[in-house]
Length: 121
Image (tube, rainbow, N blue to C red; front, side, top):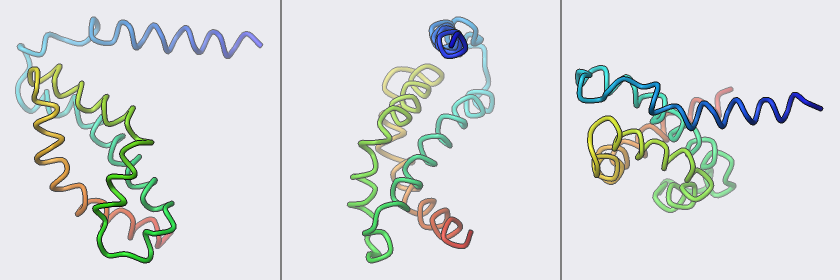
């Protein structure tokens, strides 16, 4: 099948050229930078939410801390992409700062809401 190799080449090209195709972050407003990283934040959060919701311990505990920590490993690709996006748009080190601060602080709250939404469906 030629489709799979072509898809792989297209994806590889998009990833390799991604930063080259993005505008210079120093020319963007804070709102534009935030908009640029939102898909990365959403992807990482969705991964963690789905991983936690699939964990059999989820329904048995109110303390989500251990479940979040365990969910980070299978979600590391999207978490690293989010951190890298922040570093690209907001400067080196901002991704780790965001992850260790506001992201983790709000993740449990978001996780609780979104996993409740998942259990309703």
